[in-house]
Image: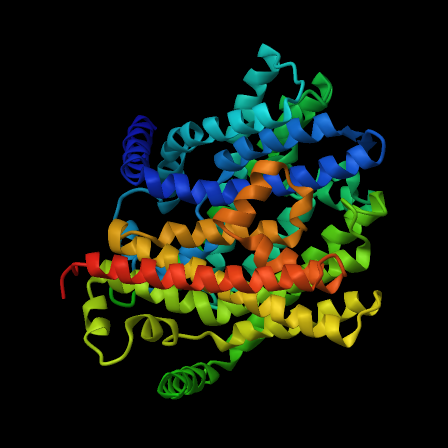
Length: 267
Length: 259
């Protein structure tokens, strides 16, 4: 356990140094990412204003707060995509990770976790610009901010594990990109990434409640912007932990089978 | 003439190469269908809560989305693969070999690599535009003007890509620009009038997405007249010439990496 913690620290430092070294690349990449919430924000602010103030319980001001926090959550829940698994497996690059005495999951998780400070540093000026442009009124309670801190890390863990499971599909077939595209589309609609789920039809909200997506986007956002009561926040935390446990079990279950199918090509 | 023949040969070879991988066609169909469905869901969500978005009705927005898909298809099939190849070659040092060939370098880097399956999006986009336009009354002249505007948009997008690519001569690792472009391109799905002034400015002058998507849409939906189209023609010509100049200037600075 202590060894693993030390490994995590070392690998996280690796990730941090890597991102810092390529900070311009990171900034340009993140800039592309951050267009997405501005687009949603502009569209839904326009609609809310045209509708005389609110849509689906969100005012123009609420949308602004929602999507600014959205962008931070997005920077936090960025994780290794299943496409990288395809790249690794096809090119035999996985060998490198397999000969290490730790599970490859830990390597990616720690590496990405280590990159977060750089992304957050790049995110701050972006958020400031948005804040000055739209001036949303949000009261940031200390208690809620602390819980938010926990929920975004849990969101990162869930999303990372979910994508890890999807990435493992590459061990069975190399034509997985359609599955990943579908995953992106589902995430857009069922996580609160495209719009807060309260704007969706009721049945969509029911479906979303049973999937991991909303716990990686909407739940942390709503925790921060004060749309959830403490009991809802508590319930959400329990659900997040539940998903982490469930996905841990799934990973344990499939990894052993997946790796037995792997034969290296070059590397 | 010689340039056209050269482009055609490259295209034929590239197409023959890709037709070997028919499963990729099916994958492209699935991907395009998913993206279209996502776009349609977004539009229905918007119009479930309002009747017009910054002055755009539902069929008009469908036109915008159709153009966005179509131009995206052209970029993905014809422009982006070529530019990515240049970026990779500059990073690996094999770009020197391109410069040795007895053809104009800009022409050569623009015609070498195509992804024909992405043309699925061109067809899909055309269908979406048609569906949207069916709900509007569009005359023959308007349709022609629209095609002209769309063509100018594609030329401007090509220019932007080429300029982004020349950055590779300086910074070597230019692949992040690709990601950035893909991200920014998503903003073209909606008419730029929805956006706050600074973003509208950026989408008009820095990455002129407005020119590629909104202007053709505005032409088709009778928001722009012949005078604007003429102005567009002049701007396109200027952009093309400036791009040529930037390309040449940067090419002179290119010093090769290894090879």
